[in-house]
Image (cartoon, rainbow, N blue to C red; front, side, top):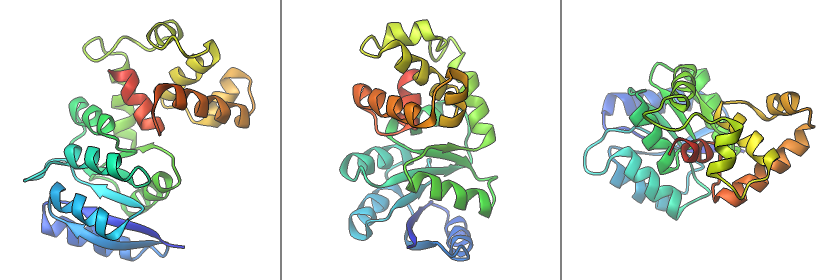
Amino acid sequence: MSIRVLVVDDQAIVRDGLVTVLSLVPDLEVVGEAADGAEAVALVAEHSPDVVLMDLRMPVVDGPTATAQITAAHPEVAVLVLTTFADDDSIVTALRAGARGYLTKDAGRVEIATAIRAVASGQSTFDAAVGARLIAALGSPTLSTPPTPVSVRERFPDLTPREADVLERIADGRTNPEIAAELFLTVPTVKSYVNQLFQKLGVRSRAEAVALVLR
C-alpha cells in the first residue's frame, strides 16, 4: 500500500523536482502539491495524505502555522519538514508546531523517502545536521536547562524516575534499542515506558517530546 504524500513549497521548481523524485519511489504516491501553508491546510482536508512534506518559510501562511493547524485538525497526518534552514529557532518552532521530522534540502531521494516512511509509521526522524543542533541546543542555557535526569524529574514530577531516564535519552536522540541497552531493559519495556510518558506529557511523538524538553 502506497504512502500518500502532499508536497508543500512556495518555489515551483522545487515542488516540481520533489514530485518528480518522489514519483520514482514505488511505495510513495504524491496526491497533491501546495504553494503556501493555507493551500496545504485545504489540500490536507481534501486529499487526506499520510505525510505532508512541508517547507517552513512561505507566503500567506508559513510552514509552522500550517503544521500546527494540520496536526490539530488531523492528528493522523504526519508533517515532515524539508527546508533550507537548520537554525535553532526554525527547528524548535517546527517541533513545537507538531512536526514529526526535520530535513534540510541537502537531503537526497533515498534520505527523503526513508524519512517519509519513518514519520508515516509514527517515528520521528532528523537528518544528521539537525540532530547535531538539537543535541547542542539541549545543552544551551539560552534554550533550556541541560536535560540531566535530575532536571527532567524536577520539570516533569508526574514521571516516574525510569520514565524520566527514558525521556532524557529521547531528548538526546537515542533510539529505543539504544535506550534499552543503556538502561539494561528490553526494547518492549522501553516502548511501554515511552507510551506511558507520552500519555502523561500529552504528546504524540518523540519530536513533540523533544520540543517539550526544549521549552
